[in-house]
Image (cartoon, rainbow, N blue to C red):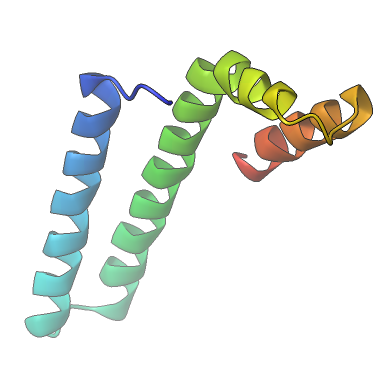
Length: 88
């Protein structure tokens, strides 16, 4: 089972605040460029959070993959690499 520390949860709470702010901007008919800028910043924050989670939990993820007897070591390594690539 994965453990998510308070730092990661706080990152997501900040992102949640950003998203709420973007919705407010849309309701107030703010400039498209400003909305897109904020959406892009939110996407970057999400990408960084994924990277933090993957790097902090990679060993545990691999252990969980190893628990499945149907996977070869090659499958486990490929899945771990895919997980890292998706996080970028």
